[in-house]
Length: 119
Picture (cartoon, rainbow, N blue to C red):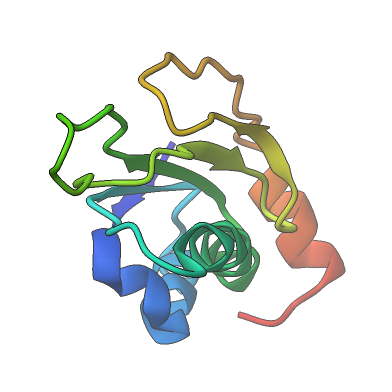
């Protein structure tokens, strides 16, 4: 299995995901510290799904999740996710620390790429 890597802010740029898909990535891993704020959860959810679809690869997005001390801002929003190559979030966590387990079908990206040859 070929694994690609992107980081946090890279989710905002489709070209990198497309390049990773063209390079044959079956899975793209995205560690992040996605800052909290108005609309940030919606952006995170949308962008993780979009980048998986752009790459036609599985995408594992891992964001910090913790409850900050009173009076401080969170460093991440959580919501880590496993997204399939067509952009369906197969598993998504909440904002609290948790463990995400999922299975990745290494054949699925090739099947999707053959059906929808956009790369």
